[in-house]
Amino acid sequence: MEQKRIVVTALALLIGAFSSRAGASSSKCRYLPGDAKWPSAAAWAQLNHTVGGSLIAGRPLGRPCFEPGFDATECAAIKAEWTSLDTFLADPVNVMSPYWMNNSCNPFYGPSGACTLGNLAVYAIDVRNAQDAVAGVRFAQANNIRLTIKNTGHDFLGRSSGAGSLALWTHNIKDIAFFNYRGRDYAGPAARLGAGVQYSDLYPVASAHGLRVLGGSCPTVGVVGGFSQGGGHGPLSAKYGLGADQVLEWEVVTADGRHITASPSQNADLYWALRGGGAGNYAVVLSVTVKAYPDGPAAGAGFTFANEDENTYWAAVSAFLKHLLVLDTLDGYMSGFTLTAQQFALDFALLPDAEAADDVTGPLEPLFAELDALNVTLVSNRASLHPNFADWFDTWAKPIYYGTNDSVGGRLIPRAAVRDNLPALVAAFRDIAENSSAVGGSALNGVAVNVTEARVGSAAASGASAVLPAWREALFTLNFGIPLAEDASWETIRFGQRWINEKQDRLRAVTPGGGTYMSEATWDNPHWKEDYFGVNYEALRAVKAKYDPENLFWANAAVGSDASWEPAADGRLCSISGSTSH
Ligand SMILES: Cc1cc2nc3c(=O)[nH]c(=O)nc-3n(C[C@H](O)[C@H](O)[C@H](O)COP(=O)(O)OP(=O)(O)OC[C@H]3O[C@@H](n4cnc5c(N)ncnc54)[C@H](O)[C@@H]3O)c2cc1C
Ligand SMILES: *[C@@H]1O[C@H](CO)[C@@H](O)[C@H](O)[C@H]1NC(C)=O
Ligand SMILES: *[C@@H]1O[C@H](CO)[C@@H](O)[C@H](O)[C@H]1NC(C)=O
Ligand SMILES: *[C@@H]1O[C@H](CO)[C@@H](O)[C@H](O)[C@H]1NC(C)=O
Ligand SMILES: *[C@@H]1O[C@H](CO)[C@@H](O)[C@H](O)[C@H]1NC(C)=O
Ligand SMILES: *[C@@H]1O[C@H](CO)[C@@H](O)[C@H](O)[C@H]1NC(C)=O
Ligand SMILES: *[C@@H]1O[C@H](CO)[C@@H](O)[C@H](O)[C@H]1NC(C)=O
View 1 (tube, rainbow, N blue to C red):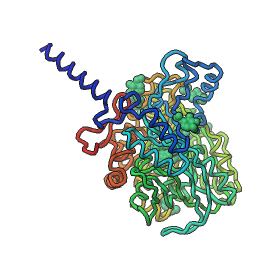
View 2 (view 1 turned 30 degrees about the vertical axis):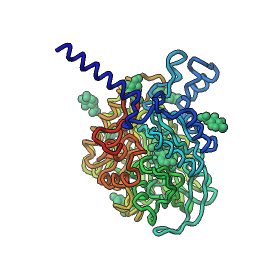
View 3 (view 1 turned 180 degrees about the horizontal axis):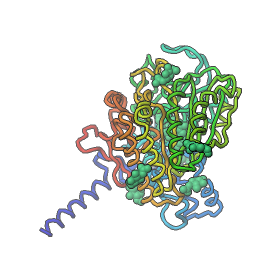
View 4 (view 1 turned 120 degrees about the vertical axis):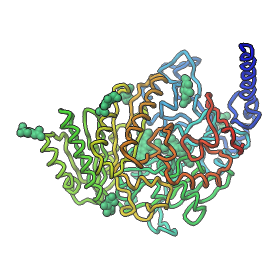
């Protein structure tokens, strides 16, 4: 008996050794550096030549904090900026999320110990044009290696990194052009934006052209990635809709290396899927053309109140949430709020095309009366009128601080939950806010935007895009984060992730059918198919099968991801047994 077990174990070890070293001489797994079939230095040099010398070797940002080559000055600089988004925006492979960085070269862990790439790409192509993207796609395909696409590295789901991968890094495609577009469904001002454009690049330029474009509240998010492909909400969403609703056409490179346009009249199925069907899973985007709108004045308002008495505080929070049902009916009215166990903040309300600051505060008066009756004292209650959207943004949204040191979950909150089930909803919020001491405290962030067809027009009609239909029923999208210390252990990071998933389930129970904005969500939500894609899932699978039948593009919680590849313990992608495509 005992002997039999030893034999079986030895056999398993042998098979294990065989499949991980020559791994992948059967093409069931992607190759990793060190594998016999990993491309040779000469092959990489040839690729580098093909892309005009723009191949970059991935390097962990924390490298100067480790031996050999520890550099005290450089290390101090990298540590000082470790939680700043800026540290990661212009790097070809490093990403913001501590979960996906996974302490593989954490500068706070040096100078002894290991500094490895972990989940980061091994090489990146600094993509400048279609030929670069085609070369990358072909090289990954021909050499059986994992391909990833990175722009800014904001992604919470680890979709812009991947162990052993070649990354297509699109950050430097910064072209912005405004023009008058004429297409099947739209004629009017538009902007063609390179795949590296971030909203911080775009808002001021649009303003200089007398125009506005829809983008994120966070200025450094990229236009073409998880924002436009995943949904995308921002201050102007209550006027113009989601990021995906803005897209008139995509310029892409497909998995088989074709450089094509996806629009309502060309490759319409791909156009549809890219609008809301999830980031980095159908094609490499080189540029996007989005609607632009005439600019005009914008009014802003904000206030906070503190938790001085528990019952009063949560009654006041309930009053605010209920009042969102009124604000929901006002064309363009958006509010962004943050709530913890200690304090509520209306970070900003926006009313585009207002004539006076009173236009944005007037609709709040009935709420103020209610809060007054509850004896709630408003702090820093303020409002202002701005000549254009960019000026509003610089005053109200830009100063909000974002760090990289958190993990995030989320849920779309349907109008019905606030209208019909408010006490249960508030109890769930309270649970997250009050019961978060084990994870260092949690803040809940809401963005209330009416993105219904009645508000946005035909772009928001059911079936017009792959946007999760629950978005149209949502009163607001909620995300909640937990803070992570710079040197948090993997156990702590993993515990936090589990905690978030548990609280997501709690929210899920009181928001039936609510769904989740997939770009502010967990990669391991067990309900991801239903929550992130809903009724669109099967149709998206068909588009995926048509444009990427061999699953060159693969990402966590992406359509088809659970039926193609699975990461092994070392991050290597191996085909799901039973899958016949590899
Ligand atoms: C601090 C912070 C604030 C945020 N604020 C907002 C907000 O206000 N509104 C909002 O809607 N979301 C917000 N998000 C979520 C954000 O939209 C997602 O993280 C999104 O995935 C970021 O996309 P990116 O391209 O900037 O990032 P990346 O991490 O570089 O990429 C994200 C995904 O897009 C894919 N991708 C990138 N470039 C391309 C390309 N050229 N072709 C094909 N696929 C590509 C990647 O492969 C990956 O799957 C915020 C996130 C953070 C961290
Ligand atoms: C690619 O070529 C350029 C130009 O010759 C060189 O500077 C760069 O180091 C090369 N990249 C790699 C990964 O070798
Ligand atoms: C992170 O690292 C730990 C070990 O340090 C490993 O067990 C885990 O699988 C890694 N997770 C990810 C997502 O990289
Ligand atoms: C508010 O304060 C007033 C005066 O201090 C008091 O009479 C009233 O009962 C308070 N109302 C509530 C709801 O606490
Ligand atoms: C906090 O968690 C405890 C234990 O799970 C639970 O009994 C309590 O109801 C929670 N608090 C709130 C406000 O939900
Ligand atoms: C959304 O906006 C439209 C148009 O402004 C408005 O008629 C409607 O009442 C709002 N709310 C809902 C639930 O549709
Ligand atoms: C996250 O980073 C910010 C900015 O550096 C810092 O103020 C905050 O304390 C950090 N959070 C934790 C939990 O370390």
